[in-house]
Length: 386
Image (cartoon, rainbow, N blue to C red):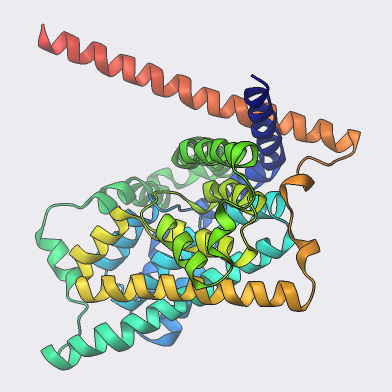
């Protein structure tokens, strides 16, 4: 019984520590969702040049898309004419980091991870894009003697794909907003409408995408902190074996950058090195079974193998680099451990408590909404069957 109480206390401490930063990240992510149209992404990702690959990585890094949400976005970009290398760069950087995951990383893991994660995401994404450019696109170009960005025209002849359908309401809204018959009608309320859209997306769709894995991550982190012995995960050491193990754990998982952060807290508490934890934080969000299936179907097995090799090798390389800098320059003070969580003054505690209540209320609202929707669908199904 005492272990269960301790588990609950550890879960609540992690939840409270992440709540204000997660709310801040969701708000910023909602603003970015409204300000960064898909057409902007398509414009800067059409070629296989180093500039296009770099832009794809830099543009994708702060976007509020997790490992599930990035799949239709990347597929839509690819079918709109983006090159394979730029698409892969976007696929790596976008789920590995984001404004919400950076804020939660600062709260739970400390400033070092908040700095390293976005830098590692951008650099590894450029590296993956260049690997595809030199060993996939160039190879196919020389074999076929024509550019490989031939997927875009075929989408015109096929039925509408999921990303195109998903993006259409936004496009229609923009077109309607520009029509002369409605221009003056919407001009006065545009500011209020934008604010409502930001809040609706941040507390609705975006939170819904991450809430399940976030809670699972917090629960697992609390369980690791409560029950896992310190030497359990350190039995592989801090070398390449430990990092390969963390990469293999992370690759099949369907987890986003924000939800992987509480798990990283648990791994650090269990004694894993900062570099091995970074491997999990990079490989976990960047790869999952659905993403790998999409890459193979749309871009071929060669691109998929290069993508996996790039993610694994880049994450291990950054893991070694982080361990070296932490030990050489004594940066351990910039990393939070489990013992540092939830150490605040009385005034700050009130703020954290209010944010915890607000975040829990938003999650509860989503749960009630899902339950009502499920009940409504069940009633409709029962009516149809009668």
